[in-house]
Each structure stands twice: as structure tokens, then as C-alpha cells.
Length: 171
Image 1 (cartoon, rainbow, N blue to C red):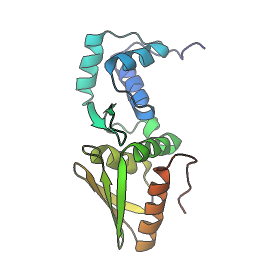
Image 2: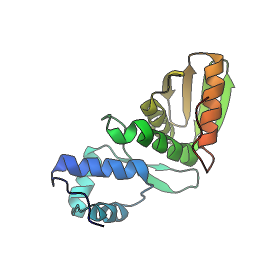
Image 3: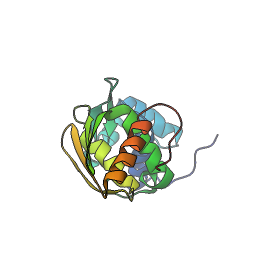
């Protein structure tokens, strides 16, 4: 299969990097370079390293203990909205979500160490009506919902996303 043509600009390359990191668990620059090559983007190790620094990429530990690259969701790109955003949320719930505690109209989510900002960003990106906002620390996220019923539905949805299998609907 021929890769989709794209301009060989730094911005196009960084969007490709963002797309790959949003949809896959990539643990090394070598693996990332291979995935970029699959998309028709040849990049040197030095350039890729600079891109990751400029994009503020960090490595986070998944629930399985592996370390994968992550970039902040700061651009509002389509990969982090709609179905792409829900798939990303499912991926990070499965990789990072440890527990959920329901407190009235709020949820306290525990993640693996260093995973709260990533999961919080994924929750924010899907823009669920039931959620008024999130606050993330290192391994804890406070999810403020609009009502106690919304909190229960959101907790059920997030915990179902954390399980392998079909993507649930938010009821």
C-alpha cells in the first residue's frame, strides 16, 4: 500500500508523529522512525529527537510497566476529537487507569505514576457533556461532573473503557 502523500515540512512531520503517538504505544525513537517511514516520512535520528523535544514529548509508564512516548494535547487536531479522541481515551484508560472513587458529583481517578496529565488530557479532548472539568496531578485526576447521575455514568463509561473489548456508549 502506498503511503498518503504529505508535504515534507516540519509541521506535517510533527502532525504525523502526534497521530502515531495518539494511536499507538511507541517506546523508542527507532520504533517511531520506522512508523514514520511506513507513512513515507524519512527523518534522521537527530531531527526526530529535536521534534520530540519541541513537541514536549515525555515517556510515561503504562499499567503493564512499559514506558511509551506521549505528547500534550495542545493543538486540537482531529486525531484527538470525535472517534479518534474516543479511541485515544480508550487506549489511555486501558494503559493508565488504576481505580475510580465516586464522591457525589465528582470522580477521583488514580493512574500509574506520571499518567494523570495524559489521561486527563484525553478525557478533556473528548468533551463529554457530563463533565464540567478536570484537574490532574501526577497520579490523580479530579473529574468534576455536572450532577451525581452524570458522575455515575461517567465512572461506568471510563471503567468500561479500561477493560479490553468493545467501546461502550455513555448512557
